[in-house]
Length: 205
Image (cartoon, rainbow, N blue to C red; front, side, top):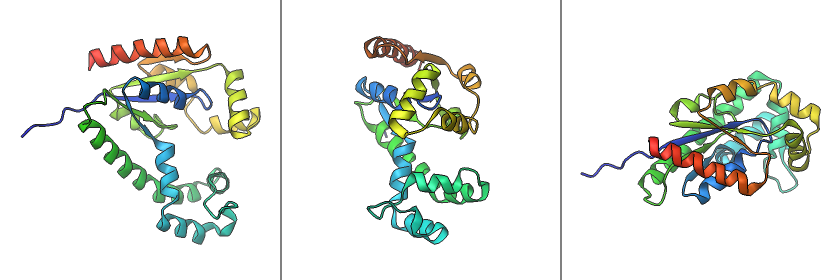
């Protein structure tokens, strides 16, 4: 029997708006398989059983104009309420974990995948970093992050600060990471630096 060798697992950490998903996309171009926790969570919210449970809990007010679950409206229900957040997590987390397990199995068996990237907003907070062979901290100046979240999510500076207070401090994440990449310069420079980091991770695997 031939055993499939486990691929290196790379976690991404960083502040909100630092560009972790863009870094993940660049790693995909370099041959990595990417597991997006956000994508898995979105899929979970589209499952009929989850939709029924969410509507039973919070009513039709959490639907958007297309009668689908609106993540922003759900977030407003759980952001400052631990009981409601735990209820949502009890629905979403098992499905995300199962989706992650299946993707890792597929990626480990795919000869075209050189490493597996975990693009998870709460990598350290969830403990997922302990399952990674290396963690890359994605750094970006605060002003750039503010501009990104304003353009992409409609958040002002106060909302960004409020959200980040619920996470580990950035200096703690940076100190616990194995590599840091500055994602505030031109894309070509960042991509080249990222290629070097990936090469070092693969050579030490």
